[in-house]
View 1: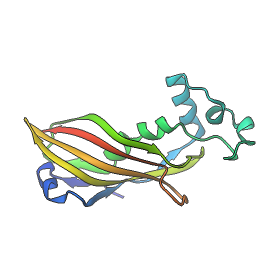
View 2: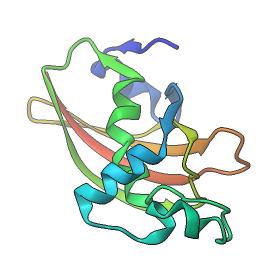
View 3: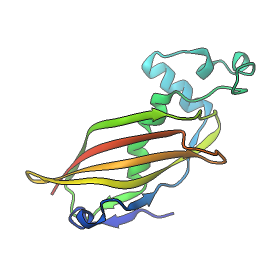
View 4: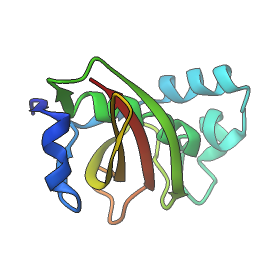
Length: 151
């Protein structure tokens, strides 16, 4: 799956439309362990495969915040903006972790343009993002991600 090469200016007419779907991204135990070390969140359901076998999930699961932190990777592998000099994350709305992400599974993001606003030197876009797990029956995370992009 290749990146969509878009113009930020062309997005204005696409509010309400799904603009892109990311490639699948692996969520191995190693990534979960690295995130635990970086955040000092060593909850056993994330880092103790032996103990987690007896959990309702049957094994370790990714931190919800790890799934959230994958949004830049998912977006970056989905879009390329031909008229952007720089972009920054501006914030989030309505983040919910709706299903577990078992270690070893794969996730991908669906990006629907929920808002488009002109700002000085660029635009602010709000994406309604639904992250799914391969083989899952519902999203693992939903959020509104706000970015500011400058020309």
